[in-house]
Image 1 (cartoon, rainbow, N blue to C red):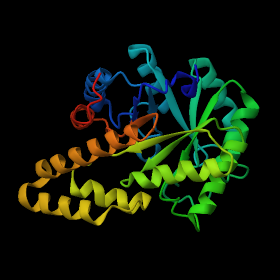
Image 2: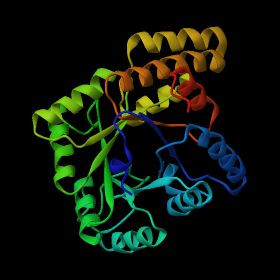
Image 3: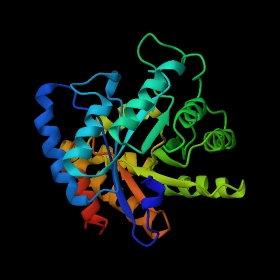
Length: 289
């Protein structure tokens, strides 16, 4: 079943994002993390292409293991930068063979030494169109950017890019992380004004360290509210990562609670292949099953 069809309006959901274990030695800890997070009864689990595209297992192998061992809906990521127009055909065939009915189509971050996407797959909308040509039964999700993509000249231009993804055949979107809930609701409202009511799932990052925040700010250019950054810096000076984690957990829990209270269908969380903080956030938000 497609992810949009599984959503019940009066029952907010939690979904999770994993990356393939980077080493064989990391696999047991990964399995333990997943086992603990199943307590959240996630609507689906997304599986990224992993940092730098490497890992002890592939995206599809990790997705297959999650589906077989835990019986949950999985959504493997498919990127432009690691494929060609031709290779997408074999990839979609493998996805179909695995029994997956949902994928997330993104351009992806360029590997070191690569500066452009392959010919014919310059944009995520190209990838969406290609996947839909090959399998009309797949539910294709795409990325949305409440703070606009770093390469977009404006919010309005970014909304138009998202609309092109939907017009190419995407049926839903999952946002990039953000720290200001107003940005998410503004994105949904802007889409509605253009006649689009497709599902947009908000993503929340539970902050675990000041270093993590600074790294992510460089990678995805997501602005962080000044008051939150000041609170994190004060906590770090006072008690290091443990104190930062407390501030991050409280902030993420408030974000999650506010999102669902204001009408978001659910929330997508980034555990970074660790369980404790996400479990804590969902419990503090009052959404623990």
